Length: 286
Image (cartoon, rainbow, N blue to C red):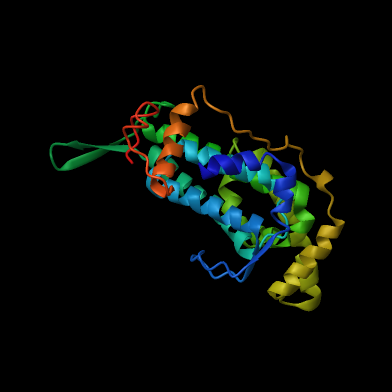
């Protein structure tokens, strides 16, 4: 339900912009890492990414993935002043998915071993027909998710690069995670944009390092900030803006009425007899 609300809110560009202007301090309930100061927008990104990762490990709910990625995509064109940890988590999300993709792709390519005479095995290549087994379908879904994460990164770089030096820094540091996808037909076009950004800032860092020697984090960020002022988004290939809308199903009351009554029964101060609301739904126990 919270994701549906977030997806609806993320359809508004004013919301997407304003959440990065609200600064929060000492977020004690976020226990993955101690963060003394972060924008509300950055915190939203962290929570959504954590939800995606939990879903990958535990639930494997495609609908949940879709809503999470759609909300991030809607907000991506307004990402600003991303906390270093937020930038790291965005790229790490792609890295995690990329590793999973590599494992699954390897499993699909492995020849099947067929035992012969009880103690000997012969390797037999088994052709895989697209869509003929669950793993092949999983790979297709995973590639859709990877593509969406790349589009989110590209959207931020296309619209807000000058305001996101920490994301550029992370892309430079983690550039190798994109290596396996440069020749993949499903990702080539959008990877070219990321390579363009990485190449532009890498060349500037090399020139400065030749003059000054090894650079620290702050010095690298300084070079990135100066380079961003000379960067033109016209260098990048144009893609359609990411715009997703919440589409209500044909009978939304079948979900929302039981859901609302469940909340009322659990958190409300007034007791409702299950007999009195039986006419509304039979799935609620008060």
